[in-house]
Image 1 (cartoon, rainbow, N blue to C red):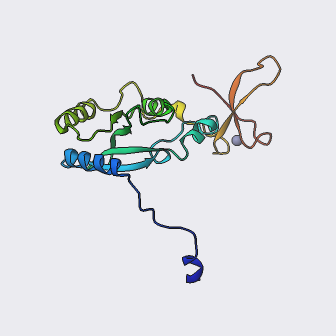
Image 2: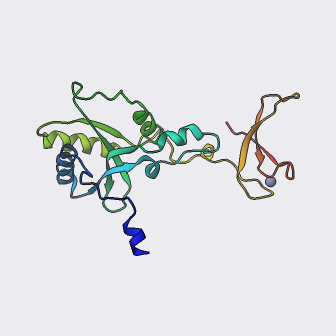
Image 3: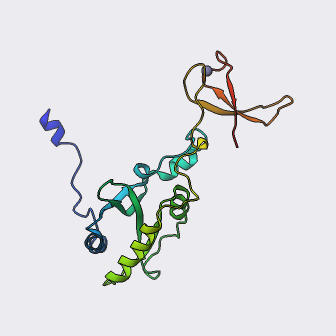
Length: 193
Ligand SMILES: [Zn+2]
């Protein structure tokens, strides 16, 4: 048994953080050490959930295998207050511009800052930039939870309902929530706008 476990092909990576990421991590951790923790490489699937996942499958799959470079969390509550992506200077960065990150963070109301990699960082500048963002708090126009984030529960069966639409008839194209147990259960719930 032990032999089998040892023969599995997993090895510890020697490069969890690159030297550039490590250098920035130390700067951030030092600036923020009194009130905040800095977590590197946080998976977006651990940070966000997808509202109404059965209607938003393509948005769920976009989160997979993506992580944000650094997440800043309050020491007392571990509540995320800010995410930071390290950007590489244009001449060395050949990756396509990815606006997905900015859109996803904006939608979830978590501030995302881009910091360009530098030889040395201006600590005061960085500290005041972070303080400004953290003090402002999450985007107040983005509610954390709304009724629209969840599919309703079938009042008869107690299970999640799915979005359906009438394929024909007088209400053709009209959307509603139907029970997963259809046709045994014919409960429907109107879609709230
Ligand atoms: Zn039902």
